[in-house]
Figure (cartoon, rainbow, N blue to C red):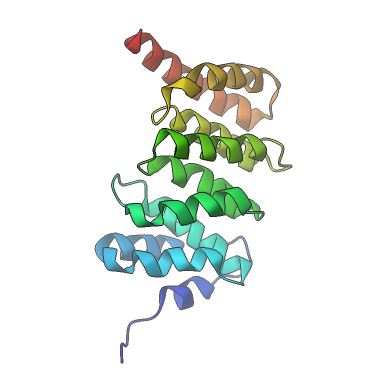
Amino acid sequence: MSLRPSICAMLTVGRTRISIGRAREVAALVLAQPKRMAELIECLWDEDPGVASRAADALERATRKPGTLAPEWKDGLLGLLMEAEQNKLRWNLALIVPRMRLSRADARRAASALYGYLDDRSSIVKTCAMHGLAALTRHDPSLTPEVLDLLRILTRSGTPAMRARGRMLLKRLEAAKSVHT
């Protein structure tokens, strides 16, 4: 019998559904013990929306380090990206999924979900969707012209957060595009 706490138990701690609780600690734990990543990913489907949102937060933090996510989680995370309804889950998945190794077909599937996220009421979800779409152009360069057009529009018409993120993403994508042309 293990005396170590389960990741789910660690993520149950939080004052509100949207608080991060011990997400930072969980992210550090799975980076130090990669075999526990599956335990964290399972929490994304937890019945408790607070656990699922804190799991998404922890996973987003952990995946900032390249190569953290193994390929076996790709299909599950792509499916969850398509079906997620909870805002915190959506905005974290919008950042996580493009960090994975994706085929062009996977990138298009993810882009389809993220275009839908742009209709969300949450400015954070929309802003993260923009970021995710820009990141997907690494996996499928044919997405670049459409994403650039979209970013130009949202940089003029979006919320302040969307306009600020849009300017940053446009600079990055336009610089990358000029290098490749």
